[in-house]
Length: 429
Image (tube, rainbow, N blue to C red; front, side, top):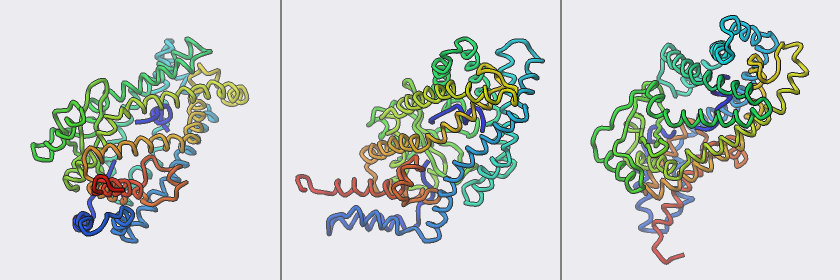
């Protein structure tokens, strides 16, 4: 739908604790003294705390997201088709050419127009998906004007970084027309690395206020957990996500030796210390296991293959429809909608594979977090809290195709298996 959405690749967790969870946790913890701990039964006990109404609401919200994947792709294709068939894209190129003769500046001016026009065209859909639907399910705290303000900030950032990336890629296309897909991929990956590096410090504060977490035993526990896992952090930050959403989240981010531990105020206000430590243990797992770098490697592969696909397909489609659309070869910036349409098809078909790669890394971070934080019930409660907006017990094929994290059942069961093995006397089988 925008340059960033179509040309970027890879870059959560929990809500209020069920009021029955502390009692259930105590029951599960005490059960091991009388009988062997049953991980399957404990998992079922956690899931049984969901009411039928809550389960139905969760399933509807998450399953509706399956259709959003399809509709996002179709609407993006529709916008691209509109800009091509009406020659709107050609007119934007002509407007840029009238203002300057410098190719790089023409590309930048075209990019600004494209971002603004495409954003306004899809604004009604964006409002449904990001505002009305979120309010329908109780996920958003924003007024409509505040939501528009957030969209305005995102638009400005997309105009800045999207047009810079677009200008660089088209410069590569003009410079090396035969191998542009390879060198253009290098440029795109460099932009992604720059975004990942500056995001926590310079981009995230555009949307939220970050502040050092007040001294407390919980803060000391978090820093101790970081030190124990060789994470060079001496501060923990909180941020005001509650003005935007009811969801909780946290992240441990950084590259090239830098690191920042951040958690939103919903996590602080609505979760027990055990949950917070379990969530932070998971996030630290991403950092220690180098998932940022592995994600960039995967994204690089996706981009290289995707750009190779663009180089193959663009000329064939353009040759057939150039007389209708008025666009030239791949170096013609007016052909950008065609490039984005082709990349959208590629990304849509790649969805199950991308979700599997993400889900695998999330599962690795889950295992790390359980071993690091040693809070299996806190982890299970955090996973259960995701039921507000994530289907807990999907079919196996459903999880493979649509889930970028392990399902709630899998996460709780993993925690209960870890707990069962921890309670088992050494040397027994």
